Length: 94
Image (cartoon, helix red, strand yellow):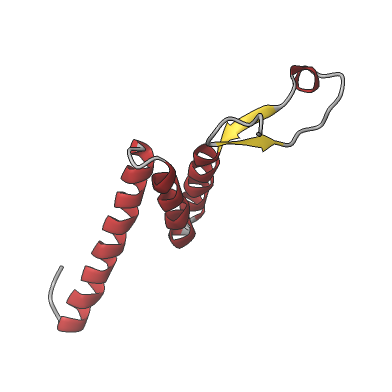
């Protein structure tokens, strides 16, 4: 049986004469890391990779509000860009 709480992962850090070294093991929820990576990727403009991270967060916690809002915004932007391309192809004004 593991001492790691369910849904958490051990975060590796250096041991030494610091508070972090004296405090013992540190655990972080995976969904937090995935959310952080997704937000960084959105900021960098890589929406496709960000979508994967937000979907992982929602698999772990289906009611995660920030992940669902970000994912909806990415999907909405993608849909709008497709509508713009379609309108150009059909010669419609936007």
